[in-house]
Amino acid sequence: MDVIRLKNMVFYGYHGVNDFEKDLGGKFEVDLELFRPLKKAGRTDNIENTLDYESIFRTVEICTRMNKYYLIEALADSVAFAVLDKYDVAEVIVRVRKPHAPVHGVLDTVEVEISRTKTDYV
Image (cartoon, rainbow, N blue to C red; front, side):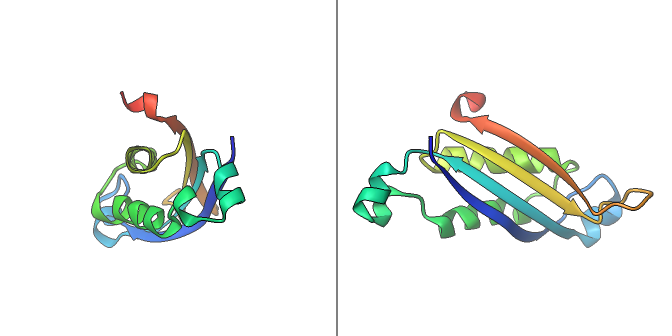
């Protein structure tokens, strides 16, 4: 299976357990790995045979900006569901990072990674 990656998409969102995270918001970084055959796209050089990266970016942006979740795990799952529902992909891996998560200690980022297929949402 072939893969298309969208790496380090950055959005401002309002996700977290603490009230100040939901009120003030913060930066969230998202990576996607989209699994699907790309042979036809490679041979035809035709955009109709691949995915629209801009549209996928907007889908992730809507998930990140329009909802408020306590957990980045829930945000990642909503992204996976939206992408699998809207696009012709066999599997998606979603990574969500929360830089500067409110942890008492020195920490660069917190990241979750999930892998989903369409059958996970049946």
